[in-house]
Length: 68
Image (cartoon, rainbow, N blue to C red; front, side, top):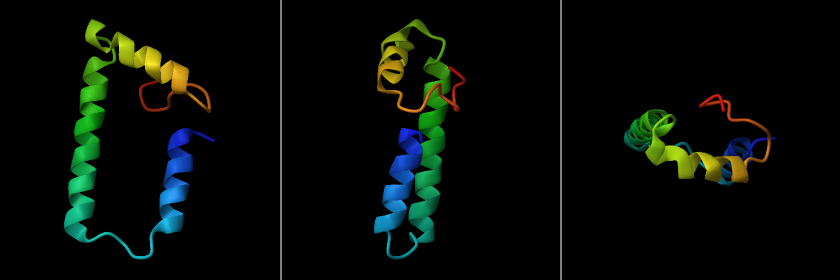
């Protein structure tokens, strides 16, 4: 099981009520922004240390988001 799935399961367990719509909306946009930055850095030289960090932290195999 990936680290992200483990995190989502843990968060769902401790959630007692749904997030307010404004919070959920903001979280979606922040996630998409972070994903965009990650995709932009995926092939740039500046992203090399982060790709290496990702490889060292992998718990369930290759990334399913960036395809590496």
